[in-house]
Length: 320
Ligand code: F6P
Picture 1 (cartoon, protein in one colour):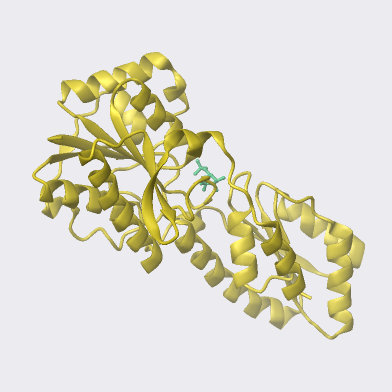
Picture 2 (picture 1 turned 120 degrees about the horizontal axis):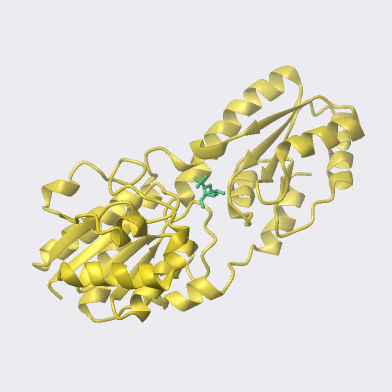
């Protein structure tokens, strides 16, 4: 394979730049030409010119959040005609293989390219960490650390004012971010979409805490489970306690990637190129038992990543 291209798609995730850098440098190491496609599938299907990477073009980016290639949500890319146009654009540019860095939605696009004959490898990157088949996706670790930083700050003010804070975190329809940040942040309650919340039980526990002279508490609510404002209202009505709400929003997506995400991005980027060289495509790079291995893209887009019920139950015990 002589010419490959890389794009980032969907929500950005810290560590995407490390993956782009690894794809570019590994490809150039093997004397390939490596091209960057800007604005994901939208840029690809609108025929935007691709940029050829030099070694220097990806210097000084490993520590930067976001993606130097820009990204876009491309709901239209479900359209077969657009997918065919994208493959035509790639072929016209002489591209023989593509690396798609993104989340579940992006992998539908990646699978479409593969089905239309363009060799494609996916790299899982989403702060939601909801892609089945991989131990982790790029961006999750940084996002959880960003939330922890916010939680630490909120605890200071919550302690001072003796209040209950409800912090809403991202995650779409999944609770991976909420559960990880809740456990690591010592939250008193965690609300995730996968498990129906029992607000009465949460209120009871908050009141038990007050009885034990616990002066503040923190509830983490996943955006897909409940609105933090609603939770705050209900908790106030049922307990009489003073509540405050913080919706962290897109702050969770930004920032310099953690060492874990830089390493994961670097390893997955390098392996993606190795896979294309070995003519292994229609797969994503997955973290399994500490190794980066290929897993069919189809598995990643048809299954659902399961939240650990055991971990959730453990979080309740630790929050007693
Ligand atoms: O998938 C990543 C994510 O940050 C989700 O957690 C969130 O629901 C969504 O993207 C927000 O999307 P947008 O940036 O398009 O508003």
